[in-house]
Structures are given as structure tokens and as C-alpha cells.
Image (tube, rainbow, N blue to C red):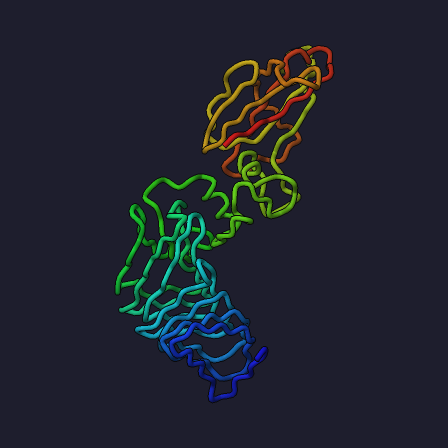
Length: 337
């Protein structure tokens, strides 16, 4: 079946001992009940229906239920398939949540409503081949309220991690596995733009989800927004006077946004500084071929530029040899991670 309409009496799927995949879309006023000790992988989309009750076995897959979901005692929800995401309306878990972690990715339960964890509910964590490497893994998100905890047990939680309820990340409505190690500033930054996202093609450092030609890590380093192609890294070439002396001689300048708290740039011919996992190097060229010309940090020149984003500050650099008479020259920022 590709489309199923549930009348008032509802419907039942009995998986028996088998793993069954259902791609059908559901609609109607009735509810849906899963019986049998096997696994139901639901990959379809349901329009508003009654409550879906998992009375036995496991509910998996990456489907979307526009209806409430109840996982009975003795039953299990296991989003996706190593790992993946499942979405439903208000959800009650009286059984277990089988949660998989694999490197920087993990399962995710998206609840569009209230999330209730019964007194016997458990979180059963399995760490796959990629291990646990991220600072935070979002277990579930919910748009309503959270009631209860996994009081029946938090099993298999990786060493150094703990379960955080009402975790302050993204929308603030999350349950998460949080590492005791200080979070990577990049992870915190990307989470603010893509809360709850686990796809490395979106949140990875080399990804470019807004297709603006700049990787996430470059936009992180220089104050761009990875979800807005018109909000790019703040790197500006200027011709201006940096010392404000009476002759007001212009020079070739580069003003860049760097992470707040970045120490003073030092070194010749290309000054450098490191902060929050970024190593910035400002390079200059007066022959437009080799970038070995001396560059000097100067007072910040940001007149006419938009205010630096929160968490960033501007720094300015002058290309030596362009004072008094502007010659051919180029300045660039090189960022290593």
C-alpha cells in the first residue's frame, strides 16, 4: 500500500518476529497499533492521525508521524537505521530508547509537542565504530514541555559523558549527551545556526550548506553565517590612513573579523595569532606573485563596515611599502585549523 486511510477503529501492524519496512503514508481519524516482537521500520509520512502505540518490539526508520506516539513498557524506539532521525507529535516513552552514537553523528528523536518519560523508561546507548567524539549529542528535541527522566536507567553512556535534561542548546528544548570536556567552540557556533542537526554535509567544518563558496570553518574563523549566502566571512581590503597623522597618507589595509579574545598578532613578515582552534596568518605581496612582503598590525580601521558579529572583533593590518604612494599590493588572511 502507498496510502492508508485509518477509520475510527484504527489499524494494527503485526510484525511477528520479523523486521518489516512500511513506506505507506497514513491519514484519517483512527490510530495505529504495532504488535509483534519484531521491528517496524516506518519510512513514510502520516497526515494527522490518532495515537500510534508501540505495544511490542521496536519502532525504527526515519518516518514522520503527524500524530501522538506512545512507546509502551517493554517496547523500544530506535530512530533511523544506524543512526537516524524519527519525528512525531507529543510522545510518551514508557519503554526504552535505543540510541546509537557513531563518531560525530547520532540518532535523534524530534518531538513536535510534549515529551513524557515514564518512571520505567530507559536510555540504552550503543557506541558504533566511530566512537563518541563530539562534545554534545542531541538525544531528543521537543517543542513543548519535558516531563520525567530516564529513571529506569541511563545505560551505556560513554565514559566522560552525562545525560543533560532541558539542555541549553539550539531552541533550549533538548535532551543531550554532554561531554565533561570543554566543548569545541566550533561545535557551539554551528549548533547556533543548525540546532539538532547531525548531517556532516551540513555541519561539518568543510561543508558549505549555503553554497556561497566558503566552508563552515572559514565562516567560523571570520564571522560569516553558514546558513546565509549573503552573510560571508568579514574580510575587507581598504585604502586608508591607519596612523591618523597630519599628512593622512593612505596605505593598503586589510581589516578582518577574528574570534573575540584572539591575542595580539606577532611575527614577521606575516603576523599570526591563534584562538578557538583557528590559526590566523596575514600575508602580503607587493609583486602580486609571492606573499612574503612584511605586514604590520595597526590600529583597527572599520569605518563604514558593519559591526562585527557577536563573539568577534575586528583587527587591521597594513602592507609595508604602500604608505605615501600606493603601489601594487595584495593582502590575504590564511586560516589553519
